[in-house]
Structure formats: structure tokens, C-alpha cells
Length: 121
Image 1 (tube, rainbow, N blue to C red):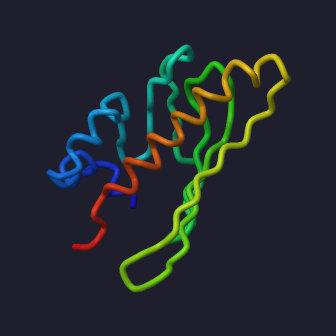
Image 2 (image 1 turned 60 degrees about the vertical axis):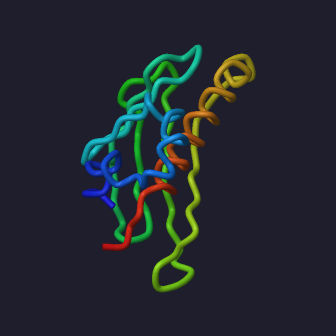
């Protein structure tokens, strides 16, 4: 998965290019993900732990609200898996109301990008 982050834009099939337009502000490299969220700005996360092939854990590097984020993968067949993305943040009620929607949108964009990558070689 680490190498796939670097290749994500080149690996998205042509028929998914239209969906990719909504991901234009999502950036990957081998150790980090960054996304621009409405009303929040750029959020950058770097990998703090890898448990191949099932979990990748991220921590915010640049974010108005610190949080952790992880991707969990569960194989369901030889060439398929289920994916779960989770965010953990300590927020008071006022901040939660302001950042819940932008954080959710950011996670959904990351999930969309990961789901579009053809992982078979």
C-alpha cells in the first residue's frame, strides 16, 4: 500500500477520471496524505505505524484540530477486501460542531481515492 500512495493518480482507471475531479485537492506520498477541507484548510497526516497488510495509522502534522486516523483492511477473498477508515479526535462540543462535517468529507475523499486504486498487478 505504501508504494500505491505514490502511484495513485496514475493508477486510477479512465472510467473513474470523472470521480477523480472531486479528489483534486487530495495529495499522497509514501508517508503522508494531505487534503484541503472546506472552512478548515489543509490537513496533513503522516504515517506513525504500519501493521502490514492490515493497518496503517496516521497522525496529524498540520491541522487546526489534532487527530489520529487509521485505515484497516480485512481480506474477503483472493483479490478483495473490506476497508474501514476511523478518526479519533478529542473535541469539545463547540469545536465538534465546526469540524465534524469537514473531517467527515475529508475521510470520504480518502476512502474514495483508496477504493479507486486497482491493487492487482
